[in-house]
Amino acid sequence: MVFESIVADVLNRFLGDYVENLDRSQLKIGIWGGDVVLQNLLLKENVLSDLDLPVRTVSGRLGKLTLKIPWKNIYTAPVIAKIECFDLLAVPNSDVVYNAEKEEKAKREAKKKELQRIEAAKLKEQAKDKTGPTENTFTEKLIAQIIKNLQVKVVDIHIRYEDSFTNSSRPYAFGVTLHDLSFDTTDDKWNLGNHQDSGKFIFKLITLDSLSFYWNSNCTLYSRLPPAECQAAFQKDIATSRFQPSGVSYILAPINSSAHLRLNPMPESDGSNFTEQKILLAIDMEDITLSLSRLQYQDIMELLQSLERITAASLHRKYRPTVPVKGHAREWWHFVYNCVLENGITRRKLNWSWQHMLFHRMASREYKDLYRQKLLNKKLADDVKKKLEALEDELDVLNITMARKQAEVENSRLGIKQKEDSGWISSWFSWGNQKKDDDTGISKLF
Image (cartoon, rainbow, N blue to C red):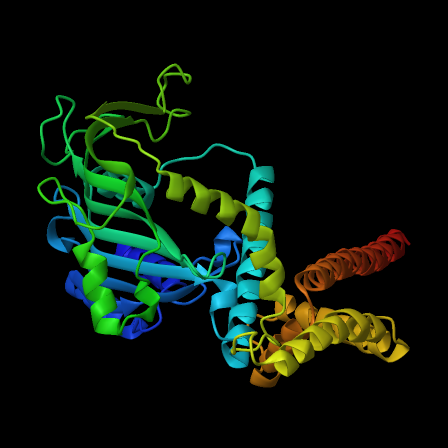
């Protein structure tokens, strides 16, 4: 079916950007077999890079991902997605030991993701310019029906941030825990079951169990525990409706709630002329308990004040010593010297050198020419692909975007010129044929 390839492509694109040990070939085989079960997936270190914060993931794990797709009865049976045991631990960039290979890899992936975002925005803008009546195809109707019957369940989520950089004498940690979150399909009377009618609304019952936010001051850091103990501590500190862990100081105590969600997926084409709400949400929430201690308030203020310092320190991680200041004055003076020299004097001198300007100009021009070949030819030689990747590593996002735009403009001009030339040539030949026909007609008259 068409939808099988759609699901495989979506899962590959989504999970591949965040998971380390995902076997994409096995993922496709699992989907075609009907069920997907992936266990103990490790998260990438740059999983939080989209937040643009000076933090780094030191450990992350997705315990189990289950996706059940009933191909034999896909129009009426539910598609079930379940996520279990999601743990993520983040620390300031300055707390992570510098690794040149990992830093270069993370930088390359961040640049690639930014370029993909720019290209996606460009395609979206081009799609807006194409106006015309839209009709629901069979695939679109099938996907809409599957979304109506989609059921999502999330169990045992724990996201934690630890900081020993702001105040080394009193490290702190804060995080979010969630025991259970479910999205179930109902009918218009909020009775559980599959959505089989042809109504224009989608009804979902949302159930939330034990969502909390905690802040522990002067606590034990998970990042200093062995991996097995760290994983056990993550699960042990998740609160439920019947259990609250000891030693956890909550700012937002565990809350339980339920919600009724009504969605109108296509208000522009259902005949209501936007008189019906696109999203209607009714929330029934139990008691909410908020508290803030003196130590928690002090830690929060220290964190806010240190964010700028953490951001500045992350720029100099490459030269930062891993030894304490006391007793290692020489290493720390070398650190100051390298920060000033490499990030200030050397960089400024290199950027304004004629040799660097010439290299940059030649690299931009070469990338533009190669990208023109990529636009004209769907299949490129391996050496051309490798050269494009190498130039993308050298150039920044701004210059890559400008070079791509120049290539697109030159290709469009070349297409217009070829069209004008072909039109002129065809008109010349048609004029010659017309003249020949006229001569033939005159000879017949005589």
